[in-house]
Length: 92
Figure 1 (cartoon, rainbow, N blue to C red):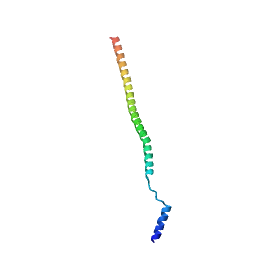
Figure 2: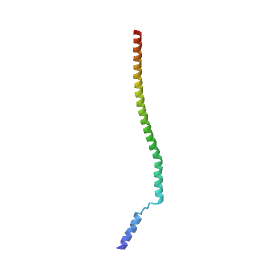
Figure 3: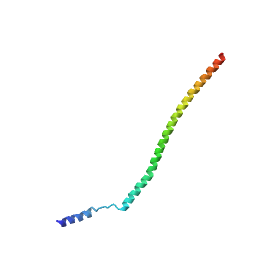
Figure 4: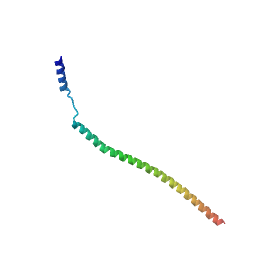
């Protein structure tokens, strides 16, 4: 019975050889992952910086539009006050 088991074990080794992970495979995987990280992290960082800058620009653009509208309203108010003063000065 033992001979049969030994024979089956040897046949199994021939048909399905064990693949051990060696140092070369580990180094290969390590270099591939480090290479991917080396190119992906700067891309992510740059995209994040672009996002934050565009958000700041959008906020400043909104404030600029509000200030332009306020400036227009103030100019109209000043113009109407000047007009009233000119009319009142001519009447009196």
